[in-house]
Image 1 (cartoon, rainbow, N blue to C red):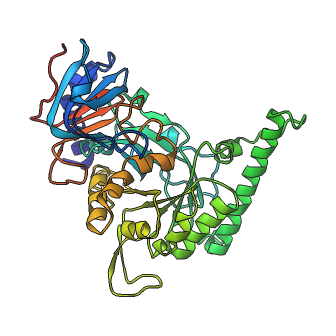
Image 2: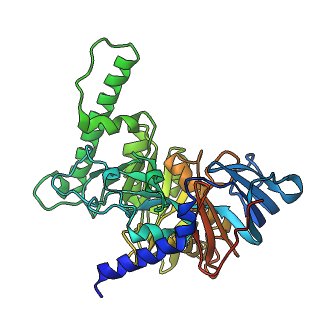
Image 3: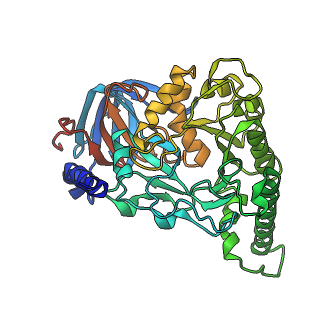
Amino acid sequence: MAKKQITMCLGIVTVCALWPFVAAAGELAKYAIRAGKILTMAQPGQGESVINHGVILICDGKIETLGPDSEIQVPDGYTPVDAADRWVMPGIVEAHSHIGTEGGFNDMVVPLNPELSIADCVNPEDIAVEKALTGGVTTVHTMPGSGTNLAGFTVIIKVDPSRPEKMILREIGAMKISQAFNPERRGGDLGLTRMGMSWMLRHVLREGKEYHAAWQAYEGGQSEEEPEYKPELENMRKVFAGEIPTIVHTCEVWGVMQTMRMFNDENGLTVIATHTPGGGYMVGNEAAKRDGVHINIGPRLMEFTWGAEFDSRFHGMGSEYSRRGVKNLSINTDSVGWSDRLAPQEELAAQAAMSARLGLDDRAALEAITVRAAQALGIDDRVGSLEAGKDADIVIKRGSLLDVTTPVDLVLVNGAIAYQREGVNLVGERS
């Protein structure tokens, strides 16, 4: 059987397994989850981080309330979910992926593509989207590739292929930039050297900044002259208005420092330095000084005799950044598709577990695939932690997200059951 036929068959099996929940999706049932342990991932001052023997009430796709079992009265009309012997945690947030974007990975004609948006390519039938649920991934920041310096604009999706009309959380997720290695072009243009790439990026940033300032002055009444409309620069207005971050594929010490300098220091932008292998952590102390700088590591999680150290030791990238004071740390798979040579999307929790094995504090590793990833993308008002009013994106299993020996039993996305493992039945009859 051809690979495409196998993929289609797997997709049919998955959809059939989810069919009872798909059919009821229009109603958005109310749920009352009784949990052995709720790991909220709430930040200090925003609620309890761990609730033992707790209850979560879900209504209209949102978390209505949560707290200890002794303090929560379950009203009539709620469908019970029995997780009394399980952990209940926020859905995993992926900050750097390429899944579900068939036909939108790279456009290699020119090195700068501010007019492109990968939201036009979202494919809910990509089996990698369905498989992501089996690992507890509920929100994915998916993007064009790194073949050009400005690849276009990303999209943030919810992982619920049963309701494709609800998948897009934010159509324009971030501006995708690449510097070093991947985008170094051999076509005879300025992209051949890092010096040339830096010039081109500063050029387009200046154009976008001036365009945003002109429209800001006109719309604010400081200027009577309406600026010329430039559709290719429209999405850059969101960047300079602070509505979306810039994510920069980079590596090595010079690249991480250049990312911080060009985007945060020079232009005041919120920036996510992603990948950062080759000793980038050695300027982690500089990243820690800047609130607008986020570090997103993966799929590589360790270094060996690279950069200035050459000490014949393995270094966990997450622990090295943490040791230098970086709090804004998230982890990625860089997944391109199911069973790809990079980490599959459903293995993001395993990436966090490996980072913990390499020295990153367990709490920091859990934050790196939940609330810190959401903060980097500017969507932590909706996802990344379990708090009243946030989207009911929830993972239930017998161990923590870092316990790779226990499978995910049930996943809710936007308050609807999107996945329940075969042979597991935690959902009871509505009262």
